[in-house]
Amino acid sequence: MKKVLTYGTFDLLHYGHINILRRAKELGDYLIVGLSTDEFNALKHKEAYHSYENRKLILEAIRYVDKVIPENDWDQKIKDVQENDIDIFVMGDDWEGKFDFLKDYCEVIYLPRTVGISTTKIKHDLFSVKK
Ligand code: C2G
Image (tube, rainbow, N blue to C red; front, side, top):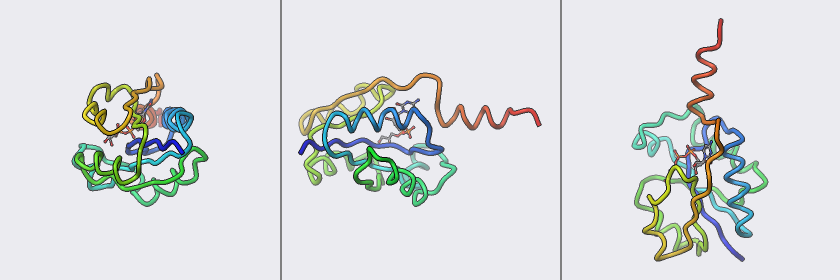
């Protein structure tokens, strides 16, 4: 069984998220998502609209996702790869090169981001909607 691992905040879920989760799952048989906790988001200078528990609930309902684990810090990836017998690590290419240190432990693949959508764009577009 080929196991795939990816990480993210996945707030205000949109088709860019679904595209990366679908493609990540297509690379193997089992997809684990490291979901950023609310505390870790603060370290990433991100504030999610949905709590960790609710983002986890939503992710677990996605057909491509087999397991969700908490992402608490930047330093857990090697341990996560080893403890979960991960074969392939996947991230969107906005992270190109940032996780190449994992190449000693598994295959590292950066997939093209989906152009034209982001959680930030959703928030901006909604905020600027004419009252
Ligand atoms: N993504 C994408 N296309 C978009 C938006 C996001 O492919 N239009 C991908 C990102 O490249 C990432 C994943 O969706 O691989 C999750 O994106 P975020 O929730 O924004 O996650 P991020 O804040 O990048 O967290 O340790 C890694 C970090 O936790 C990644």
